[in-house]
Amino acid sequence: MSHITDKERADAAAVFTAATTAEGWHRVLGEPRIWINHGSYQWLLDLALTTAGTWTAAIVGREGYGGSEYLTIQVTDPAVNAAIVKAASDSLGITYS
Image (tube, rainbow, N blue to C red; front, side, top):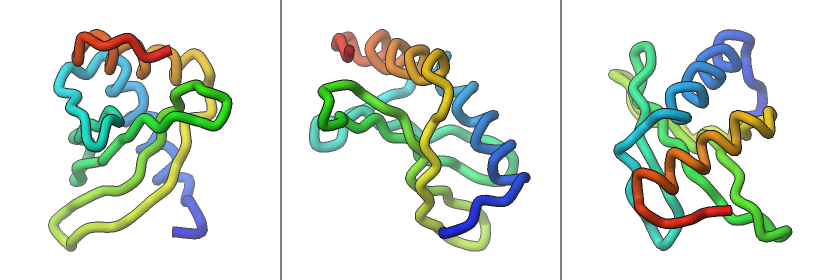
């Protein structure tokens, strides 16, 4: 998706906020991943290791009644990103820094 609408941006903010307290994280190929229900979609959020050695959160897709869609919406607030990384760490019992 090349253009993110205002509605999608607001939905993404709600998904990122929900992820800060989410407990259902799992690992796929070593990277933390979680599905967050929001609105009429299930949003897929991943943590990815950056080249700088830090973890960053991004929405990478969503599923709904009409099918699946790949997205890339990265968290922009460092405090929210840190809270998401902490939630994943706490849920999985693994330290991500």
